[in-house]
Image (tube, rainbow, N blue to C red; front, top):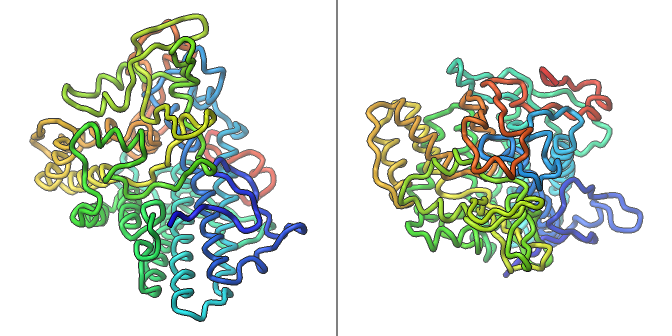
Length: 500
């Protein structure tokens, strides 16, 4: 059975970003009236997933990716993402403001569901199961939202420069109840991460009480949080915290379960990005003709049937392309060598970024729309490998790294030291996860700078020359986004990040 993400009494689409859900709409039902039964609960949870979908694709991913050294803006760019790409953003920049507002709007609604869920009438065991599973999913979505926020608007938990936790620095405000008048100061980074883990523990507890996991309730379970997705999420969180042993254990629990095995051929790997179908997908979000996500169209731009050409806003750098070894089929899947047009300039043999390819699955307005992937097995292998390397476990780290390399058509590597292994894992992580929103966060937590010119360009001619030579030092304040200025003005309890 396919469960559509529809909110009771509200027209809701996957393109939502920071839209408000009105729980006291005089023309419709308020939350107290519309959240009374297990069936109501399921619909509200579906609505939470719809909001999550709107915050897991499109600008929510590409905003940080275009800040990195992996992409050059072209003459087609038209200042879309220009402030971020040029590292000139300020606390009033739209993308910074919209992202903050989008997550906190969703959190407001999530908190309202959590608050009202105990009042749901669920006397039958089947209804109790639906309520407990749904509430567990909502806690997981809240945890995911705070993880995204703290990675954008705060310093990294683990300070690579010192080798210690930097957990006392300012994180983001923890709004844990529905109160539109609430004005809270920023919690510490540690407090935010503690809350993330607490919410994930509540998910586990609720699913245990329910006596069934989402797999036992839903036919399309990979499109929702599941126990395996929670394990993968914990591994990601622990890696960010510098909790290497816990990160490795969580990652290996997913790997050893083998529910989502790595694919070892180009066709199956390409299907993950073209058809949203692959055994490696631990969790992706439900879409259909009526509930599409945002689009990642800036990498290829509108396709012109008359010229058989694309009009990309951004091109992958030559340095990124050169990272891929001979025989690595990821390069063939991730990048498209084709005809491109930049203003009046025609180029026939440049590479475009094709991880989110043109598809005819939807109408013309959804040509670059795909199911957002939140967790997949390759990342879990990389987490296990990095965590092992950080602990000096050369054999364990190599095992995970080479398993991924073999699956991608590459030979084993044999670094002699844990430091060399860590460098190899970082390189493999960059190749595997490019364009999925990770690299900006990785540069921050690895305490590495950003040097776009050093990466090289494919062709100077079609590019925007203002952005081809930008260097940002490790630890620069701009690796932490500023708190939106309008929120600073409205909430005097908020303290702005340094340098903003």
